[in-house]
Image (cartoon, rainbow, N blue to C red; front, top):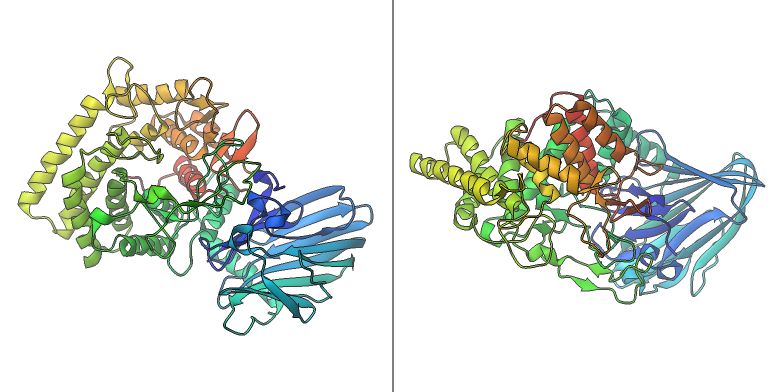
Amino acid sequence: MAARIEDYALVGDGETAALIARDGSVDFLCWPRFDSDPCFTALLGDERHGHWRIAPAGPVTGTTRRYRGDTLILETTFETDAGTVRLTDFMPQRQGASMLIRIVEGVRGEVPMHLALRLRFEYGSMPPWSQPHGNGLLAEVGPDLVVLHAPLKVRPGRAEASASFAVKAGERIPFVLAYGDSSLPAPEQPDVEQALSQTQAFWENWIGRFDKPCDWPAQVRRSLITLKALIHQRTGGLVAAATTSLPEMPGGSMNWDYRFCWLRDATFTLTALLNAGYHEEATAWRDWILRAVAGSPEQMRIVYRVDGARRLDEWEADWLPGYEGARPVRVGNAASVQTQLDVYGELLEAMHVASAAGIPRERRGIEVETALVHYLESIWDKPGSDIWETRGDPQRYTYSQVMAWVGIDRYLKGARTHKAAGPERVKRLTALRQQIHDDVCAQGFHTGRGHFVRAFGSEEIDASLLLLPIVHFLPADDPRITGTVAAVERELMDGGLVRRLKARGGEPQEGAFLACSCWLADCMKLQGRDADARTMLERVLALSNDVGLLSEEYHVPSRRMMGNIPQALTHLGVVNTALFLSGPVQERK
């Protein structure tokens, strides 16, 4: 059975990532990249579906974990009656073969250890053909090859490979699992200590560039490191999470594949990276967006693979029992074909934010912006899906309409400098901007209830409306905004955190959405409620696990993390809100 969601830590190499439980088991790893099929899938089932565990052979009396300073090098310390042992896990930044390195180090006494390695490809369904390779083994299935380099004899087996050994104080025993192409020679064993030193230097040098004033520096640095780990180093694409199908409610069916890049997150990502001082990563993300959108905005998807590919056909791995029985286990994401009007405004705003931060607007970018706004003119008032990707009938969602206004507004502001729009277009768009604003205020605001509503003609509120003052649709002190924020605090709070939607009587409850809680803190700050804003952010930070990671949601009744982990949008919220509450930042306007 998989560990609790909050008991997982992350290591990665810039192109993929592994989830490691407190008990020393690697329970999820996709090779060769984030959105590839996993070779370890115990996270969504049990040990039968693939894992790699290294841990004391006997009872463990205590376990502590930490990342080594500001790095992605994980150190897990096991206490036993026989002594103490430290397990160091890391993945060197990929330059050739992708590798997961595990070093067993004796700290005190002599501790008997056990290694169990069960490779299962294609989401836990396909055992590889294996043969001995030195002390370790070599496994192949189709195009995939995995080799285990080991300093001691590992016994191959039909079900799993294993080894029993003891580690004494001062002794270091390294194991290397490397991925390669089955048509090529197996990856050679690296110099483990050199790889460790280089990995530590990489992370320390990268995070050392962060020097912005911040009242929560440790938490922001950890969130930035986590976000960097979710950015595909070659393409610049940011995946929403490292996992698929971790449920949004215990035992529920809201289990989605988040190992892809959402255009919805474009401005959140840019503002976080730019405000933290990471212009190179921000530029790479902007360029990824331009490549993904290409030359046809009417065919734009809302989500793409890390390389910008468009096909994310959704299917179910029905042989997997799911995390704690939560089924189905989904691969791919059918939301990619939804029409989400807000995405067009999101992209136009992202281009504006990048330009305002000094990232030059190139001709290609201006042409894409012009094509986007031209298409937006024709669809701004059409029904679509909402930011939450609910799979119901299309509606005119208030937030989507607001983002259409944002898109027109930001394009017009950019047109002052890039001159791509002639006088007639500027005049037409200026009138359209006002028309959309008037339309939202007339149909998206419920006079009787005193707040904006989720969709035109609705009486319900949802947390996306917290973004209206953040994108400067209306000032934070406008009575319509203060009424909306008050309604969120009155109707959507759960244990001091913000839910996306109002709970319905008798229905199972999803967790509170952590990014929305950060948005509420931003609104409080805009309203001059500084103390309330800080309390809200610190409430979110307190939910981090022992190594500083946050998932998508928090289930208040069970006091458990829910949803995919680590969740980029949550960590983006932490960075943006912490920096906003600490001093001047580049805002979304």
